[in-house]
Length: 103
Image 1 (cartoon, rainbow, N blue to C red):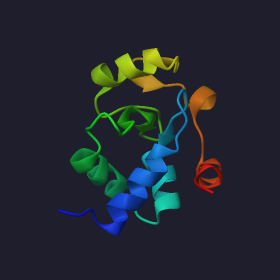
Image 2: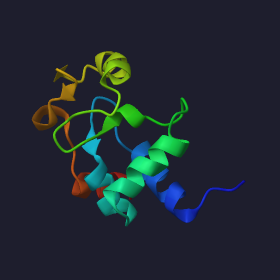
Image 3: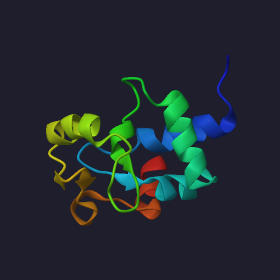
């Protein structure tokens, strides 16, 4: 079964998030041209594999949907975090930066 254009756009944006950086569902959504909930749905259904860095997409407050699992990846990438949240001011990138990475 082929992926929809939306799925391809969301996964393409997530793919350009550099290691040691994170962004929010909303910032991915701005670049992909959809809503933040769409991003969450795409990652839930298509982002669980090793090829998708799902742990780099968090809520606007830095929280993960699965902080225990994400912490392992955050530690590997030296992403500062505490209490299930990454430090967005240190590691967060916005839609403008994502768009530049897409070009």
